[in-house]
Length: 372
Image (cartoon, rainbow, N blue to C red):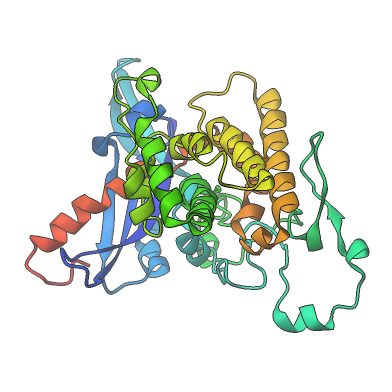
């Protein structure tokens, strides 16, 4: 008898070729035991269901029924390694999705709410509380929970991991008692880091540059030599990062952190010193997150927490207004999720996102009836 661990993923995508949004919710899964190289292939992404009518949790009911039946009855398969028949049953290792989808699966109000984190009870401040808050700023500051030599005072408890949430989602009540949507939804590093904090920094840098400086930065990016990064690495299209700064997607970061790290060499005399320190700290953190394997978990987590604390310190020294972005808080949960699920590159959703093109093709070439 063998347990098969799976990543269960849900996302919304458009079923139209045009820009008109035709929302389809789709459930996919992949084997959690695959290596990072094998998990990138579309042939390891398995389609479960899609619908442009039913919502996420409604579709989850049918998925849970099949998982329950497989758990009770099992499925016989032939093990080529042991050369014998084995009985398999599926176990959901984690729920994957972007930040809005994770909030929906956890029945959470999303990042725009006062309790913006779906993993803990951290609380933000609304405008009314900010006006009525008479507590002195020095007393309102609290020490970050991430250890490290540069752990500094951060504002308002925003960067503190609070007590974990208990399961409030119907996903846990659908007879998957061992699955807690709040604890088993790891931080989505694609949206939190690359399409989150990295894009925040880049848009801020673009807003600071004049037209002449943009031409200088574009030329510098185009002239940087990247042959040492591998034969598959192409020149950085600097003009593209300026023209489409507000609509960058995952394929623009084929090498995670490359535009960010190269940006340091192009913006060194344009950005102020505190901003450059924050860029450098983020450039140290991104490659540390995208590790394919971890030899010593405890040492790696200490280093990861140190880099996260260094980034938060530099951002706080730059301007505390960045902490209005909840994604800076989500970084504090990443070490715990790495310890529980493995390297962050394993639960990054790039491969699932690429499968959206397949679903869109099915919708375009279908008979236009409801696919559910």
